[in-house]
Image 1 (spheres, rainbow, N blue to C red):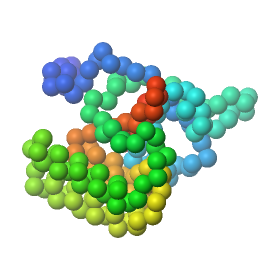
Image 2 (image 1 turned 90 degrees about the vertical axis):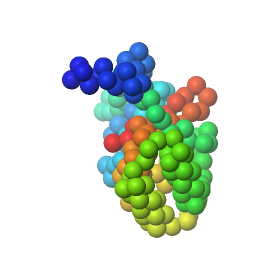
Image 3 (image 1 turned 180 degrees about the vertical axis):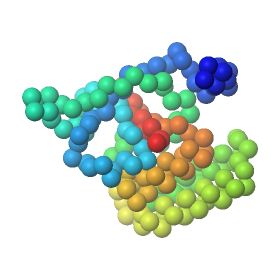
Length: 172
């Protein structure tokens, strides 16, 4: 195990000095089927409160998580996750990421076709409605597919920055 950690540190895939504390609103009204492929956390306890249920004593059910800051994150191009987008806009983002991956990393032919198939499946299943970004990617019919797509492209998380608050969608 120690050799693996040393290898990851050497390759820049792990930075033991960049531990962060994040918060997750737990027991919310969203249900277990939401966020199947992505675990959302925030650097803001107040932001996490919006997704938390209340405990019997009236306090919010917020989990505090100490984790290593993800190295390779997809930076969402808008300032907040409630930005309305069409499925076509989302697919364009995925295709642009695929194009970048082809240029930057050695993507196997097999992975290329897997990703193209995932993009097509996402497009087919979502239709072309306008919805907030988080609604599209957390949709139970495609959440796991989106998580797999990002992982095949080498990402560890989705990152959404809004001023001093950073929200991470950790890929499951």
